[in-house]
Length: 237
Image (tube, rainbow, N blue to C red):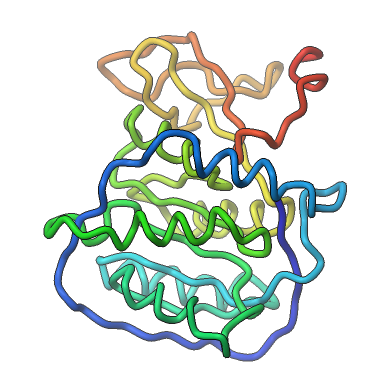
């Protein structure tokens, strides 16, 4: 799947609080299949040369929106942030014909607006599944197995779990903007995403599950989006 393009202009940000809403659980693999089909439009590096330079940030926590926006302005050259505190506002922005081609990446907290049960987040991920020019990264309030499954199901380019530092955010976003993909580790025992605090430098993988109650060293690597690695590459691992 794809994405990429640059141009600097200043940081813009819009913030609104219009109440909380809830997205429905992710569906089957429709998003993943659509992203696999559109992946044909990428170049060899997984990028699209026509990608816009605005990064849409969606999180109901205003502090995180501000932190993300400042980090992009300060540390990610060529990209401008646009922040929203509910998914509905982001949908309106993306649906506006004047903004077509401006957005290179959307970073969406999948738990945003979760209290009122509306379909905004589901609608937004559906929109982005069919747009090969916009990268999608998800943020989760936890590193649960369910968050990983949902990220894979919609064909997203990465998953970042809270809490995270500015350094970790910048490294994560830069990696996806550069290559259109990312990797993560999952514990095969408890199913959670492994926060890679301790690395085995020989195998270049986490040493064990970061959940203190688990601690298993049976880990597997995940690729985002799930079709990012070919079958041949998997066979040689």
